[in-house]
Length: 590
Image (cartoon, rainbow, N blue to C red):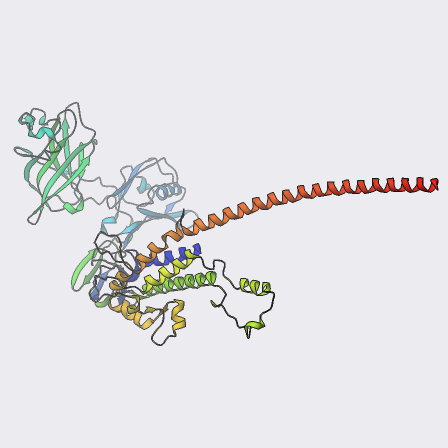
């Protein structure tokens, strides 16, 4: 019984979760093998045009043929891909040793192989793990390690970074979060200019107006602090403009050899920074001596010997709008609630439809109906008085035909009775489920469904016999279900689970009611079924104890009877001896 209720509970929950496939959609391209994807419930159904101009590719480089026994000196080098930089130290060895070092230590950014051209020579080959222009492999080889391994040519050191001094205007400051930094309201705690820099006193925070500055990709802000006491962490922020809107971004930065460095993310590229916020939550003053915007000039690194595949971004058009991304799969930021996978370049624009995913939802509903029917049938079987669900006198033509011994008929009926015949808990379970199935429920969707019968799930179509409908087994009208899932899948989901008060928690619907109704029957601890099982186990244990005590009593009583029988036999023997004695004496007297 518990297994059946657990199964129905699981199948019902599949229909009531917010990620249920009932309201999901699918991508159907007009040309197969070009595009795939998925759409969640928030996607708008419709037709879109797409032209795939170029697919994203991974950067792949190879070196030149190099003797496998070439002795490569010790030294340091680094491999860069995107924003990730892997610094490696080679202790010296062969080309195979160098390959293993890169393979084991730089696997997050490059797949490394040693191609053996012949028994004596090999070629080192690297492929970036990520596609796109930004993930292009770059090599820092100041000690010539990769040059000796035949992978790259001569190394050119990167040009020096460009720095732009950012002037913090101490005459144009505003207190920042005074409810948190209590000393802001004290005039004596205002920031002041000193010989060692701008002094920001304890428990204060201020925003400083700066000349409008627009960072570019990979730029960072560098804060220089003077004084013996420097905080282990510096909390800073910036105000910048997006159109006419002013936005705020903050960060916690930590000391490095360069100072306190804040690497600005790509979202700030080209945005106009107008104010800088500096906070001091420590117990001592801090002194800001310099603030700089540091720009890294473009650097190519040591050029690989051969580029087998260039790093490229995917380029495509949707409804005529050109878009680029650094990957081909999982493009979930192009269309709302849609994830696209680009598979092949198209010769001309094609179309794709975003339409309801009826197959998954239909399978879940069929699974739910099957589990429900199995539970109803099982409940009927174990609670029935006989296997046919009837009590019949068909064995007797008339009352006077009944046999005097009713024991045989009693046990005959017993064989036809379910194990839990008349059990109230099971009867409440089935009657409650039938009530839920036949009920009507609110639905917020336009043209929503209020009953299961409206989507093709009922105990019988028109013309079904009353006897079959009384069984309570569900049937599916597939045409009606398909129509409901195609035309209004969201309303179908709302029928099973809806959120009436918009708190992101289901609180009404067929599925919700069934899950709630089943809780007492499938709880891991306690619950009706577990309690009954425990009660039966306790009764069995008590009966075993009674049987054991009775067996002990019988054995003791048997021993007592044997003892009495022994006494009786001994008495009979003695009486026989006395009788024989008396008979012998009487014969002698005669």
